[in-house]
Image (cartoon, one colour):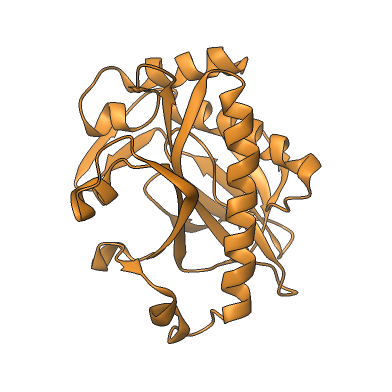
Length: 236
């Protein structure tokens, strides 16, 4: 089967398939931070991130969280529904870390109860700026009802993942989600869930097992990811 690449992002390549409403997503070994200002390649990263994505998406399935994944092709590729990505990065925060500390001066580790749900414009050229609901109201193609569905789904996912990770002695600090619309207008979870898109801390130590290891030069990225995988029982 000949594949035509539709899009290449920082961490994945997207290809068309013989079925118009399906795509193939290939996970790359590239790592980026700070909107692409820092770039490196780590052997095995694509395989590891796909394994995490499979683990977390399959965890969500019994909870009626609809996702774009149809099947897994190999260690670095999956088949998914073709969706129109909604140009929002949805960030749920349980504890303060990263940009919110820099922007607002919150102390790292401060708990948010209830969790915060933030929206950012998915646009690297503008630096992915934070949005309020009033901004989104003026954006084409994002209805208020769509935003409510997205927020409700994001907070539901947060509850499921937080409780699951807590049972393994891991704190889900925050994470980023992306959603897309199918051809019939249904909003579903897309992209990935992995240590690239989440912050995970070992309880009691705040040891990072996520991309902050790379952002902050705190050790070997893949070793940290695999340590988290070992805790969860993920086979790479």
